[in-house]
Image (cartoon, rainbow, N blue to C red; front, side, top):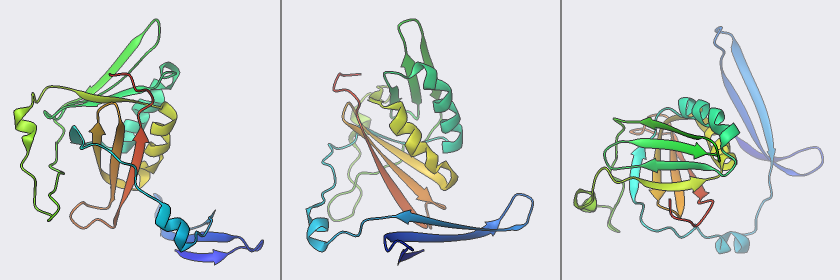
Length: 196
């Protein structure tokens, strides 16, 4: 990966990826993305979105499978997709129209502890005080969810943090979590402010 200028003297982030195909032959991919290089003063003004403490964290099923399900929901997802999870390892995706409602669910998923104190130690988990079967959800745009799911090719583990009726924060680990080559963070805002 390198920062360079292309023939029109525009800044590009250039990627060179080498690997093998399914058939075992060598493959090389070169990709250039146009970028704007920001000044330090502009970077200093950037702030992460303010979010409340997530209501639930859940380890998602493989993104390739989730992507297939979301693509099938597209004809019904004009108003968005309801994304819900609880502290019992259950995940539900649903959408509805005037004439139909479709709900897909997974169970037996993991709820990883994610909350940390400022000194890096694990916070006491207050999820035991809550009803573990209570679903916490958000209505998200089908388009935003589909854009996120395009990263399925690089993901081995993805954790979704749901801030009910506010946003969903997704952490995509590149490689195994224990020795991840990096973590991509996605922020998907709620489509509507109505409670789900």
